[in-house]
Image (tube, rainbow, N blue to C red; front, side):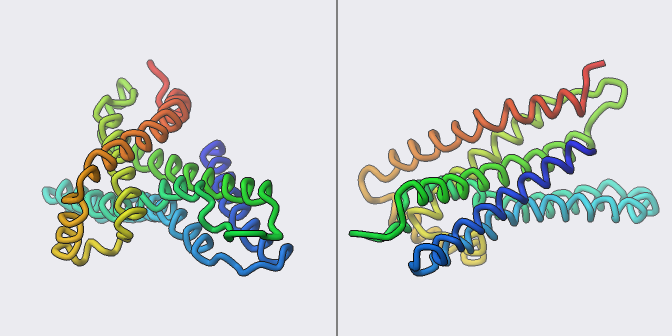
Length: 241
């Protein structure tokens, strides 16, 4: 538990550092505050909050599940399914911060902001987003493992890795849709409009291949970061026995 708390605190501090550097850029160098970046910090941290809230809700639901009798499994999986879906809708907001590395916030022409500052600021922002993605996915994967695990043989099931890989790919898809089609998580309320826009986008020659390459490279990057981090954490959480 102390290691989990340490991880959460460090991720929170990364988000605070990213927001602070964005604010200081405006104050120190006398340029306009780039508000979209501040909003992205908040949206990026939402999956972590949703994962923590989901776990807290599950713990609060335990007494009701114990009293539910035969309907307990239905109640449990309905909650887990809805909580996971809500988290998944906002998960791409964390990975999305990778795209900030294009320094699109930097003004054209002469600017009082030195390049080194924008590099450090944007890198901190991007790393905070990746940290949010890794932490929130780790929380959800661990909870799902805990629901399925055999106490007599505590190991990480292969199915949980399949789940994590699926989430990472869907996250990369979400980043592409957000960056190039300007979709937001809440646009799922208008599925017909989304499908029309998707159809028009992919009718353009070369867009499908571009999307495939984008999703593949971004998913690979997050996978190569997430797998060793979670594998190390899992070795401590679920020691082979």
